[in-house]
Length: 122
Image 1 (cartoon, rainbow, N blue to C red):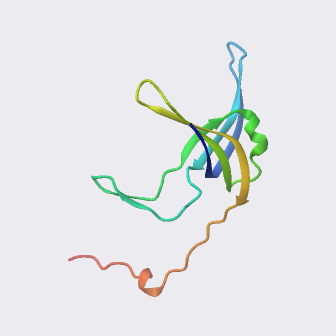
Image 2 (image 1 turned 45 degrees about the horizontal axis):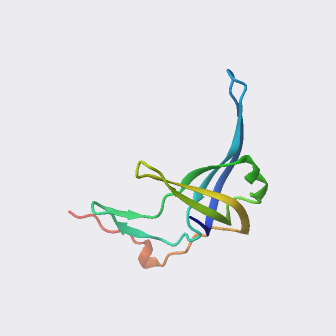
Image 3 (image 1 turned 90 degrees about the horizontal axis):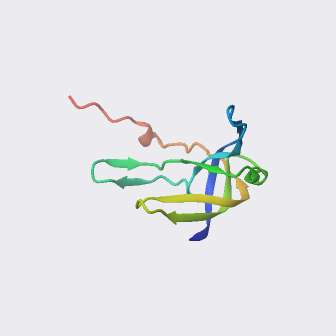
């Protein structure tokens, strides 16, 4: 299954590694991405504790995708491909990365009430 998906690229590292024994060249593009185009605060109860925020993920793409990475951090659109595997696990891959816009995180000023720390329990 392949769908268009927005994601935030936080880090991009093109790499080229030559195997010393075989001389085989392995090259690609490592990305750290936020798998959603939305960084709104989130909170979810996983049955044990309350999980806050969302986790970035590492993906490796073909080196040819390097030309599509215009700026980082930035919002991109990509083809998202999900594939089921025989061991009940799946894989996710991105292709055809398309730059949409830069992103900027800004600190939100808190009110005086929000700045007060809770008083310790005695």
